[in-house]
Length: 283
Image 1 (cartoon, helix red, strand yellow):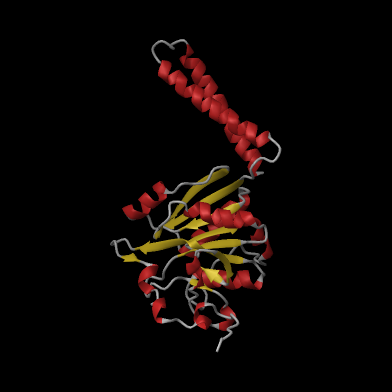
Image 2: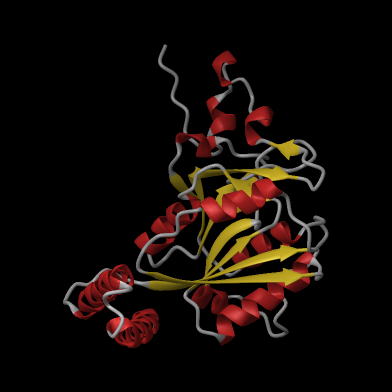
């Protein structure tokens, strides 16, 4: 589906460019530069179309990026969005849902992604500021690499304690998991949902009949409610350790994961750093 959508988009763009070039052809002496620009854009579209039709063409996917907001955002967040370098060979669509509660906005986004046939749904909340301009590309690289991966989240802090919202194994009650600091992607129980990519087809594994994948449960936030659903439905949730984000309030107050980090140089027990790891002591 993603290949077809991308091809249709490129073919439509190519048709528009050729028509526009023809309109300028009679004025080539006056607008030679304009015609040259048309030629370059036409060549680029033709190259992409040829690549899509070639055997072994790069895989493509469609991504719906949804932001839930009350309407006002910080300039720092807007600049992070503008500066984000989205990967090639993808079809992206952005949607901003204004004035809804977080859970209502998330459920509405899920319905849109399902109805419009998107491969992935990316939640990017209006207070989450990724530090890397390739953050979206990093999330996609993880979920594209393995069809069995259902969700991949970035690392960002709580606003109260600034601890990262990431848990390794809920059943062991080990609290925050700091193992993500090695920068790799690893399966976890949950991350925050404010910078999270979801394989839309995987949501069919969750036995929801009323369209309410997100709610505010007894743990107060939609993150934990959704994580419990995913765990019960055997979905695989990964944390991308190379995607670290800040959170920012409307008054400019910045919440940074680094400020909540323990001083590992003083010696954090390996059992705390890597919950469930087998520890062997050499005497």
